[in-house]
Image 1 (cartoon, rainbow, N blue to C red):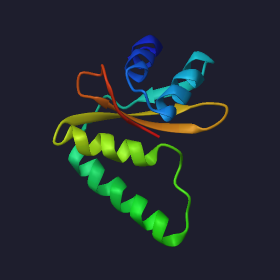
Image 2 (image 1 turned 180 degrees about the vertical axis):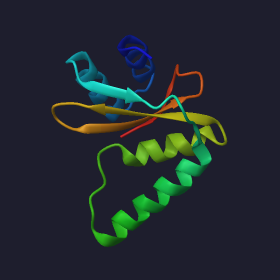
Image 3 (image 1 turned 90 degrees about the horizontal axis):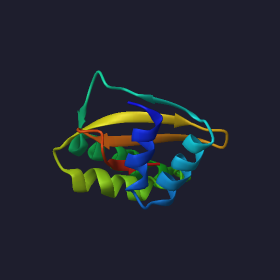
Image 4 (image 1 turned 120 degrees about the vertical axis):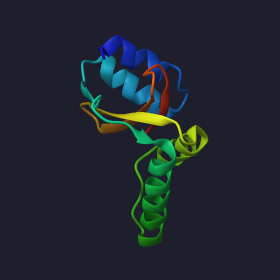
Length: 108
């Protein structure tokens, strides 16, 4: 996957986190798409919603966009998604892309 394709997928997501990740990519941020494996969005939703709940229960402030990302994973249901990381100058982003790599399912 090239930078332009990832930026296009992020552009379709209107969340603040996706916009920030896109800006980091435009500024030359490093990125990695893990194409050798997919995961069920439903399984990832279960994991991240639990982690989010634990963070809130223990007073840890979740990274910006985690609420929206969890909702995106839930909406994707049993669809398979790819994990992507963008490491920018300001922060690191976790992104899940649709199985066809054209849409951002979740970004935080």
